[in-house]
Length: 315
Ligand code: TXA
Ligand code: MG
View 1: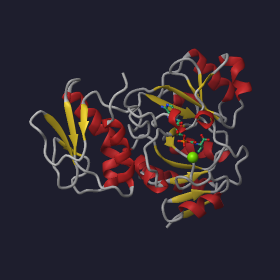
View 2: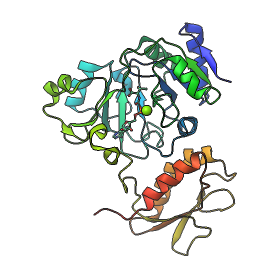
View 3: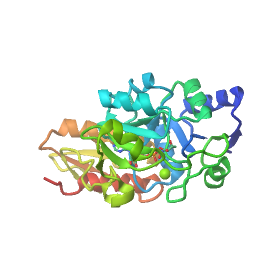
View 4: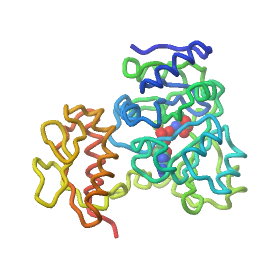
């Protein structure tokens, strides 16, 4: 059952209740409709990937109602503050150093940075203010399908897979936000709803890493060993070698388990936390192993992530 909610105070309150339970609510933004879930909850974020049927875990954009809330999740440089002051609320996403522990590790795909924006749509702002929760929200469409710019598009793709759709009319911009990386020299990571010409007067010439221009290999999370733990990682392990730390799943028990019951949503929620914890325990010369994960549903995304984590390292 997917509820159709109107942008009334009563329905927004219902949406907030659902979000606080870790359920998913699609909501309008000025760019495209987003599929929102509690960005602090691993299980809520796992449900986002599940609902979209995504083959991999890429880091998600975290939506907040204002700069003050954004500053509880990320460290702002003077340039970041200037960009936020000029363009928020609006179709600009900033990637900044993450404040540890402020968000689900799955929302940031285990990275030490986070992508944040304040959307301009009044319904999105009402929802974010009422929720008091940062919302991870990729576009509200099944993976590989076109981005939704009306509530009807969302309903066509995700009915039955999410708790509710908050209606808010057609999206004005109709194109995802522009993403600027600020963890190094200011970099265009994705062109989008805010033209580069508007941004460069503040940043100077942007480094171009636009994955819409140079192909998917430059998208964060798609670099082969991008998420590699320090330790080596052996896949499809049924028992640990004497010098290995085994991460279990289902019947394979290890030092820690992604899910004792073999639940893939729970496993996705635990994935990055388990890898980090096992990696710290193993130390830089250590060895990790992980149980086989079935290649269906969220298992595909988990295996995609594990393949990258176990790939030979770049120097
Ligand atoms: O317009 C939009 O931005 C829409 C609406 C719903 O707000 N949202 C959206 O979110 O497009 P999403 O989660 O699909 O955007 C994810 C992209 C990633 O593919 C990646 O390119 C970038 O945001 N991203 C997220 N976190 C990042 C990080 N830590 N470093 C670099 N890029 C990051
Ligand atoms: Mg999308």
